[in-house]
Structures are given as C-alpha cells and as structure tokens.
Image (spheres, helix red, strand yellow):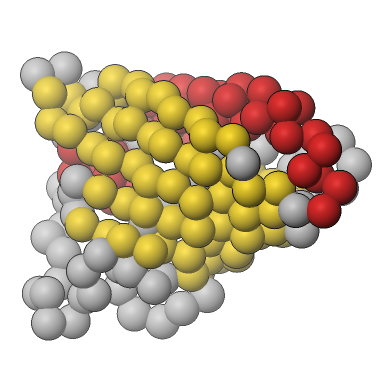
Amino acid sequence: MATLTGEILIDRAVDVVFDTVADERNEPLYNPAMVSAEKLTEGPIGAGTRFKAVHASRRRPIEMIVEFTDYDRPRHLASATTMSWGEVRGELTFHAVPAGTRMQWTWDIRPRGAAKLATPLVTAIGRRAERACWSGLKRYLEAGSPLAQVESVPPPSSSTTPTCADP
C-alpha cells in the first residue's frame, strides 16, 4: 500500500469547488486523462453514489467504479475506487480560506496481483496524475467555467440525502 497526499488553493468559493468535484461527471471537463464518467445510481449525489469512469492510459483505457463512502457538503468527500489492478480509498477536504478554497487529498493505493510489484512506480505515476488533475480543476474553475459562474444550489434536506465521497 502507498499513500498520496497533497493540497491546492483554488480561487473559487468552497461550495463551487466541492460541487464540481462531487459530480464525477464533471471530471472530463478539467482532467484530460479522464475519457468519460457516468452516474450509475439514482437520486441526488451523496454517500453511496456510484460512478463508472474511464481513464486513458498508454496501453488501453482503464475502467473504474467510484463509490462515495462519505459525503459532507461542502467540507468532506471520501471514496473507494476499484479497477482491474487494485483499489484506491481516500478523501478530499475543502476549507474556505481568504484566497478561495484549500482542497486537500489523501489516497491509499492498494495494488493487487502483479501490480503490487510495481507499487513504487504506481505511486510516482499517481502523484503526477493527482497534481495534473487538480491543477486542471484550478485552471478550469478560475478561468470562469460555466460551473464556477452558477450559484450553488443548496443540497436537498438531510431526510432525502444520505450523510456521509472520491479521486
């Protein structure tokens, strides 16, 4: 197992950053390595929401299932992501700061099978991929994307949205 951590400052309101990240279908808009993402579960996004995503790689696209394991808008999002070579579990935290939002991530990478032997390589690739992904989010939101300009909609009442999110 390997752990990746990092943080980035984004000059946008915390609810805008959270809502953009929490809807995995937005990731192809700011992460060129993400080919597609679709929501698999019905209802509002929250704990238990699942997405199918496809990530580009040199050999062939990598399909993954992302399930939010914790969702506390707009502060905390945790997820478990499964794919052919292993699993990634972790969390994102969102803090309002004078400059906008400080977003921090912690991911535990758990390779399976032959991928275990490549853990150092997987870790190095993962660090670069995370930095590229979140730098893309920063550029996207700070450039005035349509998502950043829309007022955030308050979440549904807690009676309809589970409380308890992702990479």
